[in-house]
Image 1: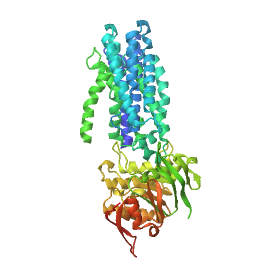
Image 2 (image 1 turned 180 degrees about the horizontal axis):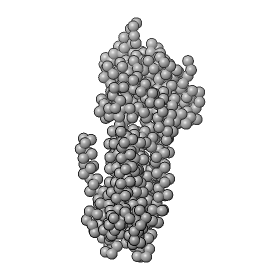
Image 3 (image 1 turned 180 degrees about the vertical axis):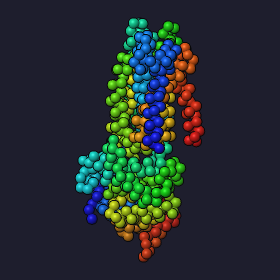
Length: 324
Length: 261
């Protein structure tokens, strides 16, 4: 049954990716897009499909996989089903710095927004780390409290800047705070894809340890887990994934929270089994969410974070009721 | 009998708070040592020190003749099965999935469980009588059954030594007798055990030797006939007891009243 579910997951991912290329928007019809994918098509349509939709698909895949993987790892690390990649304040730091960049930078320098977001995410990571550090690595309770505090400070900063921002810059700020893949470029994907490999590898490497940590530090240590080392590595890896995602796509909510729970329903409670599947499922969900964001009110485009939240909330409510 | 674990002048605690002080304790193959004492005497802390989960502030623990700090954590986990008092299950997991965690010290990060790993898990489940419930979610089990799952998880790693932290705390009488039977059988097969307990009568069913802790120090130690004295209960536990000696089984401790100080 699990093998079948694995195959179904891969099929959904491929279908979502194909749909994103073929049905991506009104600028090219599905027929024209299919012609491009089979090697033909006019130069204009080729630019739309390969130059715009393909990088956007790539970014959605990498960001979705990052968020779901980080979410699944943090839920285990903190033994907390409500944990998600944004809980630790890293997204808040990234979004606040990106907002500051949108508001303050001259128009010609707006390409520097992702760099600013990364710097903000790194600063927030350092701050949370410093607040939470302890003899057994960062303490789960203090990680959560520190993350909540940093996020609160970040949203206060964002709202202040929003109130003072010149109106032409508002769409950029909304893209950061609500999540958007609209400004994806091949260069971004080429940068982000290799960047996520190391943290993703670290999390997958510690899948089994994370499963043990989810049952408590005493248990985990007794079963051979170097608790302090694993906590440090997983915290840093999850922070790196979250920072990368926020830098290029803003704060896309609910993917990191809901995807791991969805996967647990299908593949059971083993964290080692869960992590890679959550990554693939997160990629598929983000691609589908972004497709909906583009097509639901076409030609207008919704922030992808709005769509993932709209899809995620009812699902999450159902999940909560089910477990009650 | 080969000594599995030996603590010498072992002290430790949390920060400046030294909870365990200069404790000597040894447990050999096929031997069960019960650690008893009033609340706050340092029993659970001693167990954590023995498992190496908590670093000692001074003194020494040797596992099979080698200092505990010189072992890698995973190697210790293969030798020593630790049964904690409480485990938090934040996510739905089945009984088998929990018991499989006991194989973690034998597996690398990538290797899936081998047939031997599965056999060890099945054997551990059978031993505690939970084979029938292997696919049940742990969250649906009673407190007593959960305790047995934790014992099975420790047994799945095929340890030479078991460290048990009040395993009877959540068990009804039948489960207590069942657990006592399982532990006696394991000890008869050569496994060593350190049993932290509140329940004297449970401990006396299994233990070859008894260590009584008071304010973190060993107040009395030895085989039950040497240790069981009503004066000890008066001084350490502040209760008056009757001790019933029997020819056909372990002695029974009957608490009567709170001792006058």
